Image (cartoon, rainbow, N blue to C red; front, side, top):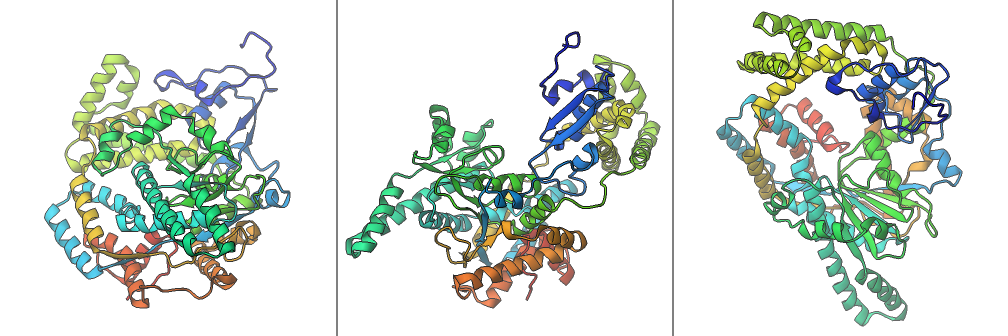
Length: 584
């Protein structure tokens, strides 16, 4: 190819990988090469991108992306490719008619728990478990993600009931997608929603017997539509998934067989096919276009690129479709507003280009610190770099035996190597990162080898017991927001009608206050827009405060932290993702 005179070359960035993380050789010094990069984020500022720039040192780079460029550590696109040449944002596409408006509905279930008994039994349970530091850290991460509460059986039952009813009452009866937190929950929700649809059919059959002519025609039409409804689970395959899900009382085998037997993608894309509702967790939520998707049900915490790409499944144009609806069961409103603000209002005056010399100095300091730590122990990183194959493996094994114990030594080494990796990634894909590739690779390899020796941190027994305890103390679940019928904006938040520039400014100065204000304003707008007064159902004010208070207590109480007002509020902010900060 280099010997030829090809005008256009198409390549994957993976083609710029090297064996054993060796430096990339130069392919061409020409300055008239233009590299046009699609999806110009994530991998475009990592090691492969650095290799590509080393191979083409004088080339010009132009980046294209349809995902939001989130500010801060997660967004490097403008820093790598330069300032915007052209911006076509979410609101403009709606004004141009390229996409349909998206409406947001908050339908987050509210939980009522016996917090006093739960706290007392949690304390006892954790005292008896005698967890070490790594187990405590992993347990904190697991329950900090809300996984146990999101997957509580009572909550899933209520969400399934609501999905079935909402799906049946939609105005535009296109396709719909339910996004679950994981594979097991996707299978569980498929089974639950299927059962709820069967109950709706039975109820409609009874109503049809006594309905007058006009109402009867509507019921008969909905009955025919529900009877032919097809649903499917679309999730990626993994090892031991059949046994793993069977332990949870779930059978994924029929779903796996169906994926192999049928072309579910073609069926879902066909507007006339009865496959109208799919349950996913990662597949199909990005880069998968089905114009007839009218509703996306979100029951998975998401943010930034993934959240924006997921909700965009519902904004494509189709015959008879006037809008898309995002139904939020898990409380992503704060993240959604922030992503929209940055995505649509990204034309700020401040340049994102930073002084890379400071990043070089940070990396040099981090490498110096870890070298100073390991060399007195007899670990020579330079020796590991100079040898190959079995000699290198022998030196790595010797270093692991030195670094793995005692605990204080291992923890400090892992902390120092994490700082090296973080500093190196911050510098990529700048060419000034190239001289550091080999020493960084050595310490990264040693860190991975130490972690591999330790094996995975096991908290399965205590996690299962806590999950059982939470389920025992969960006394009620309710979705208090009435279902909005039809396709209009009444009672919903129109995402295309937001003042994005103002929103971006607000988030930049006070993100938490802005998120809470927006959430409260959206709720008030929804209820003022025709939904009537908020219905408390079986939950009084005191019980609702108990419920919110619990979500902080359940996490903070795991590790014996004093339940101060500040900690409860921090817990509520982190865990509840925008719920009101109230406590008894």
